[in-house]
Amino acid sequence: MSIKHYLVWIGLLILTACGHKKNKPIAVEGKVKKDVISFAPKVTGRILKIFVTEGQTVKKGDTLALLDVPEVSAKIAQAQGAVNAAAAQEQMARHGATADQMKQLQAKYRGLKEQYAFAQKSFARATNMYNDSLMSPQAYDEVYAKLQGAKAQYDAVVAELDDVKKGTRIEKVEMASGQASQAKGALQEANVAYSERYIIATNDMEIETISLNTGELATAGFALFNGYIPGSTWFRFTIPESSIAAYKKDQQVQVQVVYNKEVLSGSILYIKQLTRYADITTAYPDYQLQDAVYEIKVKPTDTTKAQNVLVNANVLLK
Image: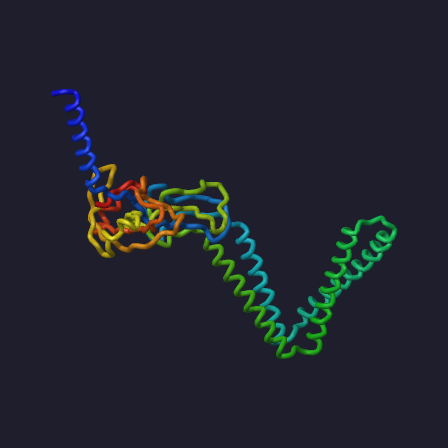
């Protein structure tokens, strides 16, 4: 065989091979996905203990972590004091002041009167110092604010004492009752916030990551536990407009996992168009620039078999 004939023969083989390669159907590449879920505390606190580990599957209602929230404990004490005070005010409004309550109220009146008088003297001295440029405007404003606060407290106790002496109006009784209800609501809210120191799973979850460690501060709303909903595995593919006609909603397809060659059956759940700059799953897309790009979501028929497939692993749509 001459060299010329040999080269012609080699060329024919190359053309034939190229023709076979061109006609060979190319599987569409995609990714394994799962529905993501996260759990975050509703209150800010320091993590005392974490009861789960990464990779663990938890059930709805399981306790994930315990927080230390001393601020909420202080709010409970404050709210309880407000409830007691409001209840006493309501009783006073309904039944009038007793002799002991009148003594307490008069003692409160004398104390606030002295505070107001002292605030007036302090403000007078501060005014002289300010006029002589011996006091800064900031310090002068602070003294004035204290005077106004003392005056407001004094005026309030004077009005309260007058009401007790004259007898309580029905509007005052209703107002005291409303304040008591408001204080009880604040106490209830504080108790609910205190119960939130336990982070409880609201859904089954495969924990992928735990963002913080014991002793660190977890802020309200920060995702402390991240993972996937069990049994939510699905496959995502991106198809160009030129090839989308081969796929229909509810169509039965075969999906092959690349890393272990496992073939899974499934059906096309939906086909939707992606925006121009949307994420393209296919590693090496082969389409014209003017083509629209569509996302295909495939739901596996056997979810139990599919749940062991690694997230974001490559798959092929056959």
